[in-house]
Length: 307
Image (cartoon, rainbow, N blue to C red; front, top):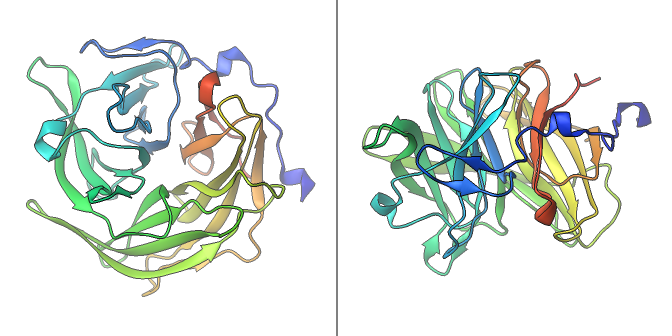
């Protein structure tokens, strides 16, 4: 399937317009652009999360705005962290919520002792100064999984129920794991009821102690479930990534997920560590990604239509 692999070693700075320092009207700064999760918010904007750790002061959530196509803009956002027990630790995933316009979920990777392990139900709202900010509506405590959560997606069943998908990253010694279940959201509560799971291994990457079989998840407009995987050789690289169709989400089935067999890589992206995938700006049947390339920063770009 070599014809389906597309090397992207030639990316130029014109495709990396969001790599420079960004300042929001609220006065936040980031000296490098990268992401550990991404969710399409509307026609022109993506919510971006970063894996800033406990005690660190870097940005945690941002907004990538393509309203002006000639000058994409990244804005770091504040959030009402004090209302939910303090700032996040290691945000690793984000997804929009079908049927709930402007609302999205962001997830921490795991528990640390009895702390963290949270999914935040959010929407954008102006703060007291009128600046765009994230309003955390409520918090869901996740079950304790085998490994760290790296990907999250949300599907809408035919009966109107929300299905939450969570991807554990996997290692060279154990495969990644996809878990899913019913997500219930009301004005006063959010809950998750586990349904099922399966394990999987990413295709198209060489054997490596630094492989992560799942670095993100995304359900596209055709209900295809996509996953990304990476080889992470440290803050200076070299990096290697693949994006592959992991399965199909069927909103009419009692068991809504069907795994792809065989799993094959659709895109191979050499030189970048893809940590976030979402819909393309230009083609709803294709994808875009953001990389987190350690000390080298990161990029956003669209991918060509899958063949």
